[in-house]
Image (cartoon, rainbow, N blue to C red; front, side, top):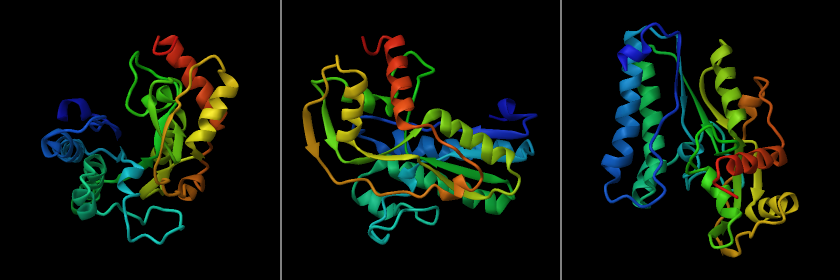
Length: 249
């Protein structure tokens, strides 16, 4: 880490394990890499005298809080409850929460300037030839043999996330956390939208009704001038990139 970070004015820490399936050892496979990996980056940043660290967290570190008032949009003051995450075995949410909490704790102790961005489900065109965990959600909508969970989901375009990261890097006065979510939509409405654009696909027809996700407020980020793309544009560009990567025919 030290060699990679030496000479940098800013570091964007974006990596964290995402395991789609149940893992038998979450402490080793999810929590340790997320927390220890983040601390390794931050310590190297301190040694290199980096001016700012922009860390990608997640609304996973925000949304699992049974004490939050029902119906109130979740904002940057809301943190996922660590004990509740453990009790419910919500290991990914726990890993993101612990990593972000430790990042701010280290920033307070060391004086390192750390800002976090908390995206919702990130979709959009792929850079790599394989499908990542969040993009697989949209791919599953387009394949009739897959089961999908019917609920209100929160989406954000990967390009809008990139804009948010640059925005919080370039704005001197920023501090703390920034929720980064642009579209809350019912899964059924997203599938209907995709059907209108790509009627030839065999769409998912195995639907399981589950609880809706909470709503989020991105006002703090929007007040910096953050703009987002229409969901239709994001979905179209997503599908076209899946076709180009031969993920979809």
